[in-house]
Length: 327
Image (cartoon, rainbow, N blue to C red; front, top):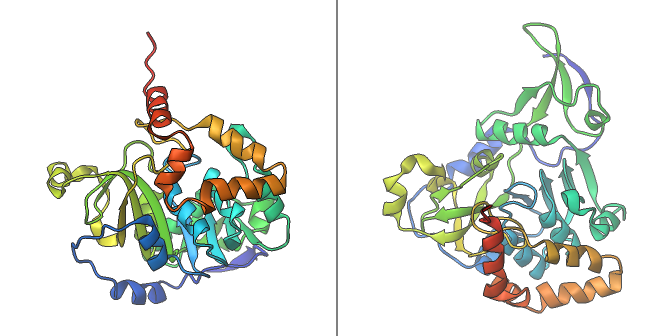
């Protein structure tokens, strides 16, 4: 296949499927109890220097309990998959846990505005960046999930995003037309928040799943956080609802309101007041350090963070907002 052009930025992960297969060959597929705390999951699977990925979409269904724990444990030099990242990226940037990013959507919190602190960090020179589109990153995960080294797309052709990527323009062997080859991506560890899971890791996602099915199958280690744990019999009653199967999962953490202050479809709305509080605190770096200490470093668990954000009373208010019915 003839290579016609290529992006200028580095490729952070090896796309060789045989090397990935060596790892997966040694990974247990036993149906065993995988329940543990967020602290235990991060201690065991998120190591300095590893490549980390997050499920969800924007501020929807983000595994914020794991994100907080990574910052609390002061992990460093991670790679990060900035696929559809908003508040999760904001929190990780606050902890300066990563030094390289595959970026499609980062820094912005959608209609809420830009994270000033994340922007400062990205402009500091401490972070390497390779650019992609959202679809290109989904295609990279799909290639990995399919066990091949790349996938062909037509996105990014003729754009500056392609120039700043690590993709290649190739000639189609059938038509002679230009296509973009995007390399497979096997994250070292992914964290995905779901509506329900059993103790083995079978997961149910309600609403949009984006690329989480592919992410779970591409990642070498998968940490699941769930709004609630259910009995395996409940999973078996509707096997077609299982979005992520147990044999790709390494840890299961029960975290009610685990996406807060993000949205959890059908369960609770995003806390727009608290997200605004984050954006306001970031204006002054010294005040922001105090903010981080209050909400992350000085609390032992995510549950304690929820208490500082208003506890059950505030969560119930957000539940009502998510399920508001017009009269």
